[in-house]
Length: 365
Image 1: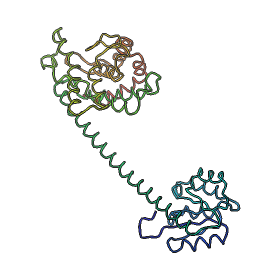
Image 2 (image 1 turned 135 degrees about the vertical axis):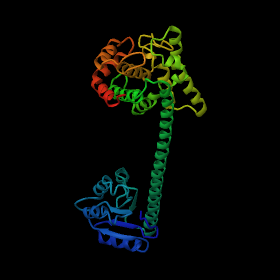
Image 3 (image 1 turned 90 degrees about the vertical axis):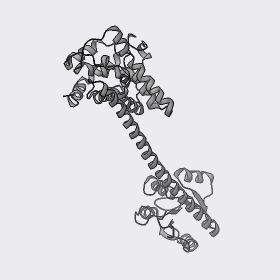
Image 4 (image 1 turned 30 degrees about the vertical axis):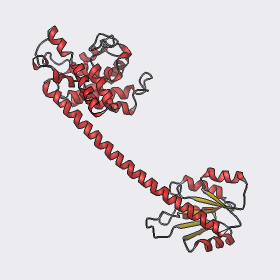
């Protein structure tokens, strides 16, 4: 359709019979700009002219060299002409011929001999329909653009909130440093490695991977509720202190649950709660806070468990010196089937060089 609504629409006639061309031109010339092509190939050439494309095509079926069906097929296969409405001109009236034309993408038939009122009505109606379709497509594109912008704004708002909450926990815990960024990267490469594993492919969709990676910084948000005397103690915790420290998983879950009650549930918050609550559960059931075992532990919690432990091992903490990378790899491998999901450990072993690269790139030093 023409950008200027006052400009006449353009109709291309593709027909090898001069008589019918003259009749159609006479019928249409007052209301439309009319182009003429006397064979199929010439019609295709004119239709694909970027500077002067037709708004509608009247296409004869019976023509030498290339019939109307073949012309229609080629036009519908070309992105420049695929949306142009095509009305067949034919002396044929068999149902099979009409079905074939509609299957190829034609919008209507006009039978010969030609009736001027029918031609005017069909052309006018299909041009109006095409204009409406174009406007609807433009409105849909505009709406999609606005939805994308709004979605991006929401995502940025979520990321800011995540960053603020994670930073709050970080200010309480001097051991954190780049822990948040590293664990996000660890989890991302683990997810990508496991994406095609038969046990994980159904769950690790692109959307779920994104949610797990983005929620990972909230795994220790519950530490804001742990007293400094315990959180920052430079030695081993006694039993009472350990019992208090281990409540941070439940505290984080409860904080996110309260947020969910205030703003409504989302798939992102659902995974964030899983990560906060279950990243200290162990594959053999000896973890906390609920002693979950095996597949009872959400995938997000299993991934976070390995990423969190690896990073704790290879970085200095108030209660320990940093382990060498290979020592940490040995510890995690020994924890396969005990602390960690064996499948995730296998993925980790395949990726250990990448883990080391991430550790070096986001070094606390």
